[in-house]
Length: 274
Image (tube, rainbow, N blue to C red; front, side):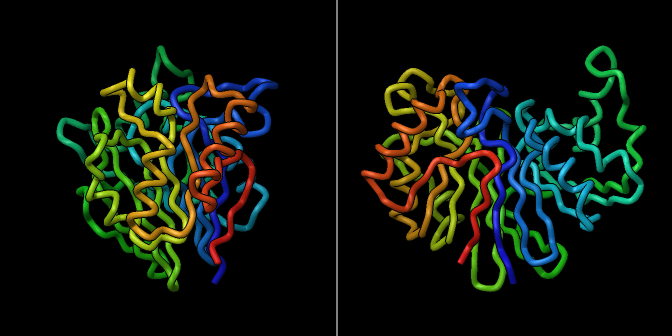
């Protein structure tokens, strides 16, 4: 059964449409995971809009949406997702419940209410269900697809995912801040032996030293974790908006000199898990 990941948005914090960001892309977090006939969507950043336009042309009419958390760069594409306005589609939307966090529906609806947005969520005609779970729960999706979850170190909370099926696995680990010298056991357990790890590499080591508490990590830490966990391949993700194409190309080259099976995620590309 085919197992692939397509990157529809790879940036963090804020979209950055610019000629200087064309190669790697400027949309925020959204990854489509295809497991046979089943579609799993990781986050609803501004890349979610492009994915929606693509889904309108396909026969796929069902998907599971897994949200890492509710910061704006991970949900801002939701009001612009064309399939949500069509009664032909159905979506199972899931997220971890963290202390003090409202339910999924109310959070997504709040960004579509005046004075923030003119079209309310009630105009969406798709069949949508909303399910909370506790971090560290294991989820079972359509087709028997198994998804493990883990809490990440991020302001207001965030959740990482590992999708396992037919002997292959993909881990999605964004947004998270590492503690220097203390590898995160939650992440190590989640990515152990994974075929592909998508990891928050927002900052360089120099930038990270000035951004304590901001909730993000580095490619250096991602490589360390993958090596220790025996992961096969690493996709650097959640790129800092100020890192243009030239910067990202240099960063990718530097990372690959440290560990060959690493690459910087590019918007519009698909990775097939072998």
